[in-house]
Amino acid sequence: MSLRRAKSVDEYVEWVRQAMFEVGDLRECLEYELEDLTKFPAFLDPLEEGIKGLYQSMLDGSYSFGREDLGFMDLAAHYSEEIPFHTLLKQINETHRKGLDVEGED
Figure 1: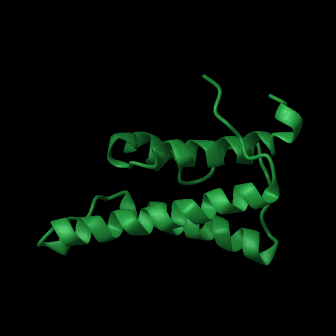
Figure 2: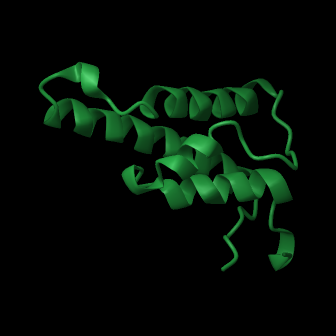
Figure 3: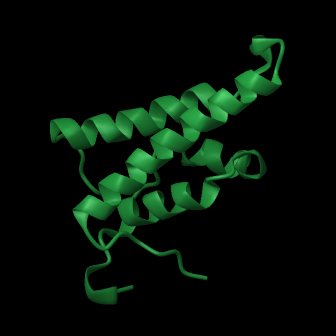
């Protein structure tokens, strides 16, 4: 199954914005559910930092597409069962690696 890639820069940036919202929402849900906040999953902080770093690089103009996976994808793959928005992260990574899907190219 081929993952959908963003068709425009605006869509790609919106996906990254959505991932930032989702990781923040996951953190809030865990804070609500956990009485002992020291038991956050090990992946949460590095995942959040990676997504925010990606977005910041888009804002400051230092972002560039690449052939390698984004830095947080190893974590996302390892903890995919615990990350409800894992597919979104895979789509972001696919767009990063293969570029925008201009006119339905694969």
